[in-house]
Length: 113
Length: 115
Image (cartoon, rainbow over all chains, first blue to last red; front, side, top):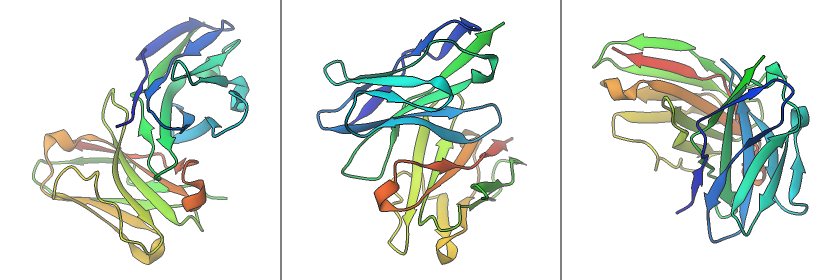
């Protein structure tokens, strides 16, 4: 069965510093990969997705992620964070055989002024 | 246009009572999901509706949980005889259909507290 591991439950970082949120998955088949963001008191929204093609995917708000098949990773990065990036970030994976997403436990991004 | 809406936003109930949570998906979206998000956990799939097909109930944790989707639109998640372990945020999501099931649009959730 597929699983998704987000190694860090919380990541504190200073404003304007770079950040990387880590995501690893276990799957022996081709997968689709997603990052969703949940701002305080809001629902989740799609940040970016990898379905095929270029392994470097750009999303909203300056975020990007790189699919690394050999390391089964899909880490999320931003070169310079802003206070408005304070949120919880969820990694999710699906193979294309069904409609379900398997979710990581989430990483809280805490921006320090 | 309007997004996915859920009501109530917060619900406090006593152990043993029944609760109903409502989800209004985006108009025209044929697929609808219910998830449960417990503190510090990822999203736990509960149930999936697609059009007029039989729902996938494989994620419902017990027979106290049930869900309906009337007219292919609004959905209600019912929890009977609530227990303290049912306390969580219940999220609803919808998608355009089977070809786009990955881009799920989420509602703000209902925070359920069972005392």
